[in-house]
Length: 251
Image 1 (cartoon, rainbow, N blue to C red):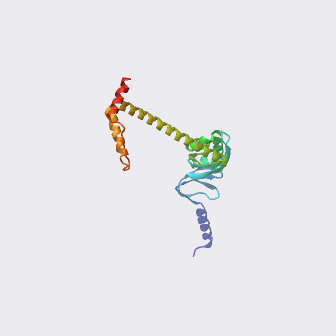
Image 2: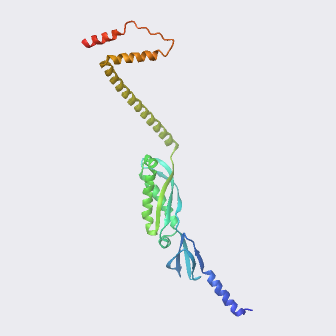
Image 3: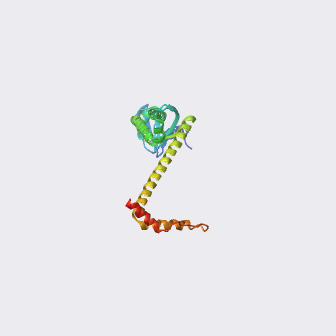
């Protein structure tokens, strides 16, 4: 039988040892403090710290996705809109993320909101709608430069939704319709111009070759002859065409 006097210290030692056991996951790092002073980082695995004396703060090193709440802004061309997005970032230095900034996720969210409002206010509506990727990259660069001292790397920023007033949507629809009509008319005019040039070239060729005129005449007769109820009457012989052409040339 174990002596109760010896059992109590053994139980106390066991509790003391178990109280200091910590498990650090593969995607985590632990910032270790001893009596409030930073003493180092703990790598993944089973670790032991001195209870009461030591304290650790775990930091997730995976990519974090944070929504940028909808922001009411006025574009460079005075169009009111609501715009939101999403920012992707990860911690590269766990000690800086804890020591240099309080609540780094909240800080990144505030930076992203400010940068989004700033960039949207400096751009016109057409640029915001057509160049989301470019604007997202500008915002990413701004946030990344601000958060670099915190040991945080911003990997990407995406602009998701852009909400504009209904009257502006109708104006844009009318503008797009007018642009399509303009392009259609230009294409039609270019087609007419090309057709006219081809017809002029064909006329020049027919003028220079009597046999070409006859072949064209025969082709037209063939096309007319597809209709069985058609009757073709020539009031003068075919040779008159040659006579008329010679007479024209003499003049």
